[in-house]
Length: 188
Image 1 (cartoon, rainbow, N blue to C red):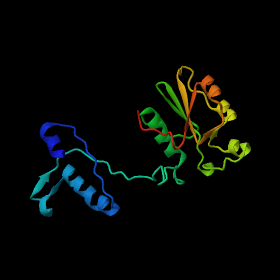
Image 2 (image 1 turned 180 degrees about the vertical axis):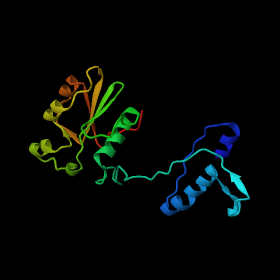
Image 3 (image 1 turned 90 degrees about the horizontal axis):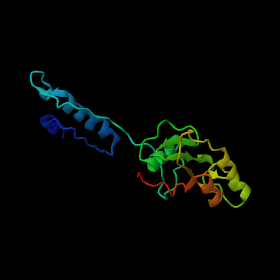
């Protein structure tokens, strides 16, 4: 592809995937560097091979967001899940690293995430335990959610593990509740 880009001035892009870390770092990345920058054939400076230009980025995958059962993995951090939720809801990257329940707005949506890994899956046997969990949208949490900018006209979408707010109250507040992890959809 790099050769085709050089030939016709194209802007083709591609992704290489390698499962073995040592091969990715020591073999694949080095081969790409040589193709991009050029190299001396056989290590002989008298036989230079011109580079094809371009560049590449070496990335590694982080912790999977969901475990084998589809639940949020215990090692997932709030900012990582927030970035995923925001992208899935809006189709664009999160505007800044998330540090609070309010993730940001995009077009007609203000996105929120109520997520504390320490309280995921807290037993919901009694109302007190349920309402005390940080991952549940309660009437008090709804009232305390930061409002989007004044010029925002749209729907507030709140992702949480559970909700104790009535549909009527959610509708009056222009809030849509989505349960994590089950209602985290793909990007639109």
